Amino acid sequence: MKGIEAIVAHIEADSRQECGALLQAAQRQAEELREHGRQKQARFADREHERMEEHLAQIEQSRRQLLIMERRSALLQARQAVVEEAFAAARASLEGLDTARREKLYLKLAEAAVEPEKEGEALVCREDRASFGAALQRTYPKLRLSAEPCIAAGFLLRYGAVEVDCTLPTLLAQVRRRKSAQVAALLFGTEDGDEMR
Image 1 (cartoon, rainbow, N blue to C red):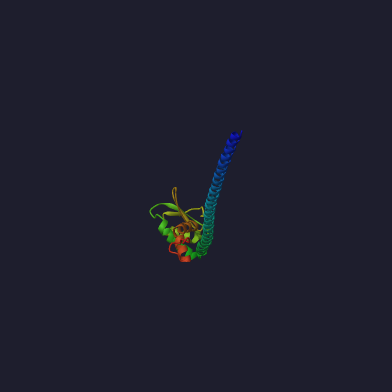
Image 2: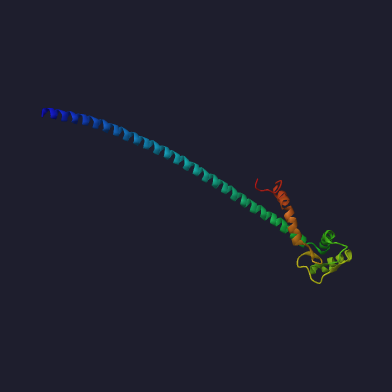
């Protein structure tokens, strides 16, 4: 049996040696896998950190842009309020003219709006009917004074179905649409009234 025992002992020794070698190889491989995992995890963490940094930078940029837009919006609203006040002051000034100056202004408006060769009617507000209404009829005999008064300062002209609005609110609204940028430029010193510069 000594021969068999020697063979078994030899097989056991070879098996132990192979198992030891396999175990060492498995441990090396496990360590390599762990190291690879650590490196991969570190790269992932670095990428995530960079991504978060970029995201935070984008949030900060968005916040700054929002603050700029809010500031510009507040500035625009303040400037619009000043322009509103300027046009309101102009309207009050026009509506506050004495009778003679108002008549002169309305006749100048009528000069541009009346079609002297056409028959029509003029609607004049009650307070200007005696002065301006009479002057309008003297200057433009084909216009008759309507019994219906105009409800706003100024006057309306009617030629059949066509109506020409020469009331101060309408005329000021037209001037405002055309001149708001110029008024803003005068008030705020910008070239074109653009407050967003």
